[in-house]
Image (cartoon, rainbow, N blue to C red; front, side, top):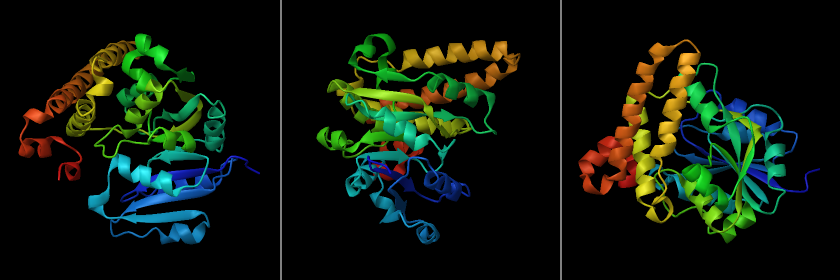
Length: 305
């Protein structure tokens, strides 16, 4: 029987066909989950079939205008009474039945406030997406502290709510997520943890299947919002360059493509870079843009209304 209580929190909006499979895998974890809290943004669909199938499903209905990356997850965490809360996205599928066990054990160390999982690419992922996952989520686990800022810079703060476990007591003590966030609520909280002298743990043994084959405009919108979140929090990101890490990824990807005998893919890498950097460049300077232009650039128009 589990000594440490664990709840899973998932914001849900228009879930895909595999969502029920994700819930089923969570229910079959070796380390049992107490509750799965679904923060459902009203979309005309019903999740009652899941509630009927499993007795530990909690559904919280949210109006579309209420949704916020930070506030919605914070609401779920504060509803939970568990010792550990695992935030996940509706498209992240546990790779095996040891996901919750690995994340819980990562938080056994009292220094660690949050632990996040490795993301593996889907079968249909492009070669570029596969390498990006490999670059951002390597096979080696790592504890990150304030001392790492000198060596790995902004990667020290990297954390992902695609699948991340939070010590709930520490979460409350640290003030939780920012009140409102267009993006990066996980990274903003991780930065707070690091600055408070606590640790973040990347557990490569905790694995979820999650990736996206973004097109040009999707890359642009995503990086615009990411840059906005950084521009809104200069107290965290000022003096820490994201461009350096981005250039490292580009150089390593080019080498990888050449090694794989697919140099023609460098053109696709180039167009992806144009999309990412142009979105990032404008996002960092969003305060100089008109509302009309911002709404064309963002992937979260509700945030600006």
